[in-house]
Amino acid sequence: MTSATQAYTYAAPSSLVDGRLGLATSGGRALSGPAVAPRFFSGVVTQAAPAAAGLLSVADVALARYHQPQARPGWVRDPVVTCNGDRLRFESFSACGGVYARLDLLNGALDGEVFDRGTTNVDVNAPLREALARIGARDPLHLGVGLDELVVTTMDGAVVEKKVPLPERWLRGFAEVQVIASGMDQRGELTGMAAVRFLRGLPKKGTVWVAQAGRELKLSDRQVPGSVQLAGPNRLGTLLPLLRFAKSLRVYGPADAASSAWELELPGMRYTLTLSPERWRGFSGEGAVLDDLATDEAENDADVVGMLLNFEPEIEIGLLADRAGIPADRVRTALTQLGVAGRVGYDLSEAAHFHRELPYDKDNVLLLNPRLAKARKLVDAGAVHLEGESATVRTSGGARRVLLADGSCTCEWWWDHRGSRGPCKHVLAARIVARAAVEVSR
Image (cartoon, rainbow, N blue to C red):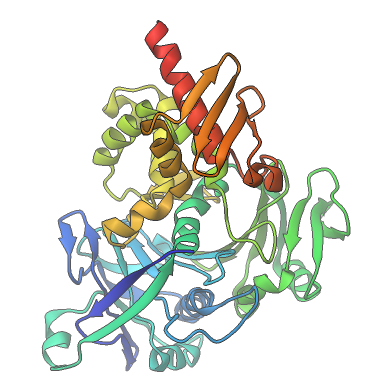
């Protein structure tokens, strides 16, 4: 597994003093352009206690390894925040690559001034975590995302720099989880104390399936119609500190009942956890969409659509299609391409994409689609030879036989996964060449 290094540089540490929470920002992107320390919001959080607990939960996921937990010096990643104008979205991804968390502070929870829209990292340090844990229901909370000049100038020499490894798997998973979420539907809901009882009664280990039964959610040891899979129930642990504020719990899943998403509705905000299909397995959603991404049309459409995004809280596909001058189905494919590049997220509650830019170096983002990059190298090297409905792909490890119709291959990777994680690089390369041959013949 390859790793890049990401440096977070803050003008001062984040702090909570006398009810004023100042979140220091690192380099990011805003409507006004790239920024070293962008300032997005200043105002009152009307629901202080759930907001503080939710931010702590997002930070906890960023520090966690749910599979093979162990101390990893330097694995301290800071959450990502996006200001979409009428809301703030805090995101994180677990070090093991299997859990994604997001806290949405909606318009009803915020009362203040928006200075800019965009995405950045925020410093969540140990003293800040301790202070957030002490916030009570009646405590006032003023939030500043981005420190004003007065705060910075009174903290001479307080520059904070953190350097952390960003494994390819982790980086790719963060970008791809919204592609997986966009294929989910709501499968169940509990309100009030029923949600509390259900979450507290879950087993700690193993795999169970969850399905709506009347007004309840029922557990089963096997898949049943309409159920969602829950592997490693302990991965829902960061929901538990929020239960005292919860109004409802919603469960989402795809048609194949593999990954699942769990959303707590809180006063003026939502907290969502999305879990990979297995406790030991990180997200591998890129495989399901690689065929769409492997076309020149998708790349060109993504370039056009990407230029039209303005950190909207909800991307309207019809409006975007009109502005881009391309059909709605091609806009959806372009959003998939942008999603895998980390440039859009997906809100399950609103069934809509939103614009954000992962605050990573450009070279790091190039790591997000290694399988597709390897397939294109095979194409450029002339390694693919079409033979009707099949192809031979010559590699340094020998020739691989590909059947285009079912996407099968004689490589070890395909035999290990049998298409469950999308096409291998050899199938992708063969399909790219086959598609090009059809275009030439027209």
